[in-house]
Image 1: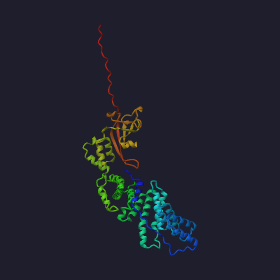
Image 2 (image 1 turned 60 degrees about the vertical axis):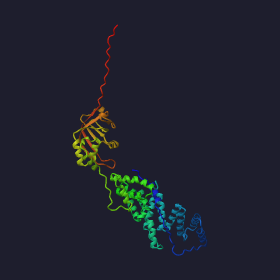
Image 3 (image 1 turned 180 degrees about the horizontal axis):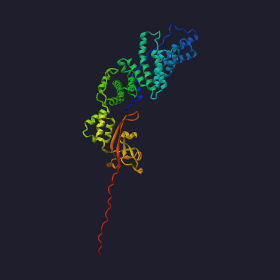
Image 4 (image 1 turned 90 degrees about the vertical axis):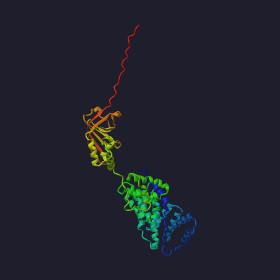
Length: 444
């Protein structure tokens, strides 16, 4: 599978226009600066027309008057000035200072989350930045409405902020905490806050991240939902991103379904709604046992199967199918071409299939009829071939077989035991020496 890298997904941020609302904390009542010198310094800063000069003047003012009664208002202004200057470091600095005096300020929380999320979500994740963004986002989700903001305005602000907060928490779950199940829950909570149209734009990047979370191995893996959200993103992504997403979508669909038939219908359905319907399903691919059953049903002569195919049936077939084949194989003599994994005078263990050779495990065990002479015991890595391929050939008689369940590090397999083993060497063609020519006696 050609997996989408994080950098590619983060680049999709350009697809969604995040409009940060204007969140200005209002100082209650009229604030009066009583010191005329301080008042003049404030006026001089506030009347600057150049944003850089104005920001610098206000910073000087706050350094000179750190306990000013207008400190909160100035920090709000500085956030706007630095944001307009695209100076994220100073935006974050102003937000941090504002949160020290007003911990629930939604504007400062929102800008801080956006900046720290961007800092943490690069190709090499900054887990501390992601953790900080998530912690601030959690505060933002429970921040109370200030008395000086009416309910309608507060709803507009939270409608814009809450999806961003959920997104930051989800990214931290996925990249820092490696908890894909928690990330899925947060991404779903975020997408539920969007209208269908918003999910096609502002929510599209995190739909992709939700697809990746569903596709990741672990308790939260859900391939059907991964397919749905990859298809959903494919539906509304620009063509350049469609080309990057499609191989991953096809990989998961083919892995689950066993082919690409029906994928176009899934794409069409995913375009109609953000979340899959409750009855949405995809027909799974036949299991190995089902595939094997179909092969055996169409095979008139089971004994003609290649040795690796016989082992495949014994490893993955149902008990009935495996026993059906074994009834044909048992007590029959066969060559066992493969690589020696272990050998003694009485037992030779062989890797026959490509998987067994790759993993250096024995899938065939041959108990010898007569002990092998010490000098002839094969070394690990030695190879037995068919006589027709030059030999030497190891032969034995099928005796027993056992299905070996798969583990985290090995695939399911079969271990086949043979008895009465023996080794054949290819006979060398006789060398015929030329007969000496007979010369007649010379005559004089």
